[in-house]
Image (cartoon, rainbow, N blue to C red):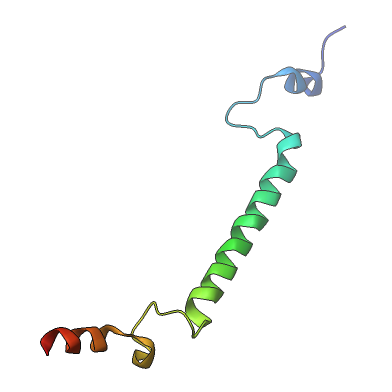
Length: 72
């Protein structure tokens, strides 16, 4: 009895990098966590008016007051 081509192909080792099926939910959960962390950080930094990370609202910055005190 000779083995068929299908049986021979199934017995061959696969070349390359293969990910175990058990790790797929872990990668999916980590991807969702990374995406949501990025989204909420972006939302916080670019849409929160109480943060002073740029010169958009100079009234909240105390830099001019400090510089004027040292000049006097």
